[in-house]
Image 1 (cartoon, rainbow, N blue to C red):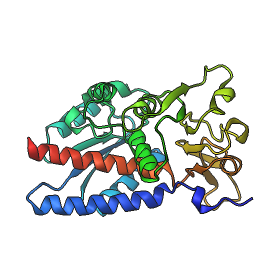
Image 2: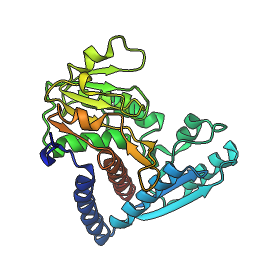
Image 3: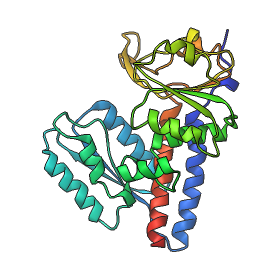
Image 4: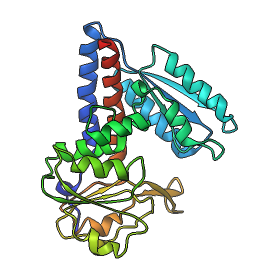
Length: 296
C-alpha cells in the first residue's frame, strides 16, 4: 500500500510558504522605518547535527530578510565565559533574538545559560519567565518546536477541539509545553501526557485522535500503538547508520513511518516535517521581538 501525498503533513513546503509571508512582512516593516530583525545563534563545540541545524537557521534568516549573527565557541569554553558572551549579546541593542544551540558540553549547566538570556530576546522560549507566561496563557515567546507544531495543525486545518491528544514525552523543550498548548483556548484538545514511566503506554496511545511523539527513541512508535485514522506528529530525529546510504546514515524519527502511515489519516515525515517548522517558529518569534523593540 502506497502512502499518498494527501496523508503527508509537509513541514518543508509549509515552512517555505510561511517564510515567504515573513519576508514580505519584514520588507513592509523595514520600509516603514522598522529595524531589520537580527538573530544571534551561539554554537558551542563541533557537534555535526548542531552545526547543520544552525546553518539551516542562518539560511532561513537570509531568505526572510533577517540579519544572522553566528557565534562559534570552542567546546572547552568555561561556563562563566559562555555566560559572559550571553550577557554581551543581551546588552547589544542591535540583537533582537538570542539562541544558544543545544546540546551543550557536559560541564555547562543548561538551565543556568538559558536563564541568563534576556527574556525580551528569548526567542527559543526557554527562559523561566517565558515558560511561566506560557503556563498562564500570557503573551510570550513560545518554544519554537511546539509553536511550529501548532502552526502545522492550524494551517492543515486539522480539527483539535474536543479531540484526545496524547503527547509522548515530557521534556521542558517539547513535551511539557506541547501538552499545555494543546489544552489552551484555540486548540481546545483534551490532553494526556505519557512518558517512560507510564504503565501500559500502548493502551493510552491507541486512544489518541492526535498523537505527538517526542520521546527521543528512534522508531519507538509502531503501528500497533496507533488508532486507525489518527493524526501523527513525529518530533524525533536520529542519525541511524546505513551502509547503503550515500552519507552512511539515514534520518529516522520517533515513529516507524512506513507502517504507521498505513493507519494514520495524516502524518509528518522525518526529515521534512517538524524540523523546518521549528525554524519557522523561531523566525516568527524573532520578528515579534524586533517589533516589540520598535514599540518600546
